[in-house]
Image 1 (cartoon, rainbow, N blue to C red):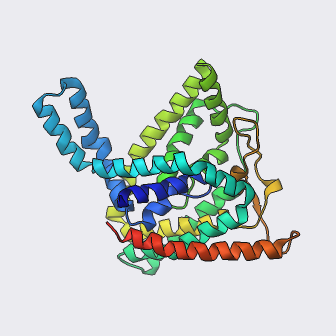
Image 2 (spheres, rainbow, N blue to C red):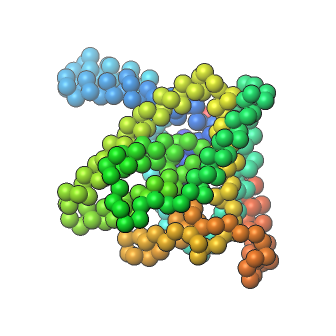
Image 3 (cartoon, rainbow, N blue to C red):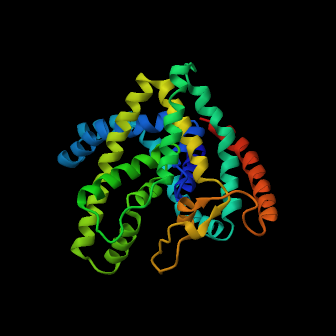
Length: 324
């Protein structure tokens, strides 16, 4: 149940453009374990699954599969995956409503939830000297730079190389703390084409849409496999510097989560019904200062209350993170 709840929180984070599921994996104390499990899944796990497929359910193939399942922490991954899927099914409409009707309060709540959790990766660092802490700066610059980047795409259809790269980067970002996969698709100009092709393929099996989604899916699979190996290597060889970089990513994400935004300046991305998605505008709208719009006093008060609620919630999240 603990792993299910942690997966549920990670799933909620991945619903929100601008919020990373990797952030919650880090503050919940399972980031290292998740990376190691994904790394093993692409090695012995894939080999054992292939052997089971080739040789059927012979005793030696079944024993090899059980050994690989344990090596890749399969039960842990399944529990997390079921929790994340449950969040996507049950909470997507809730956060869609909250971000559409009460975006400032919702973003303030997430800020309150994440701020105290920075203590978790800080405590995981072996060394906190200048050489390691320097990496906080490029991490923060990367996240803020992505949020300031103009959207690509336009009227020019993306090439298959861009689609493949977008899938690989997006799935890596879903694991990497502080960086949102859906927001990276927006920056690369792939979010709206992806929605269009999904809409098309659900109505008719258009070859162009099938090729687009297959290329994106291949990028997702290979990106996840490659990223897990890279991150495992970095945590093993450069643990303090890597964790400092992850802290920087989280700090930079507060730029995206700033509660007061000019939504008229955000990207106007339609959903399948043609309605403008307010949650996407949350990730792309420009930040503004308090007092620059009518009714800011009451809005800031509500955001402050939501921030306090997030801080209280962070105590529960951190307590859950200490539960293995």
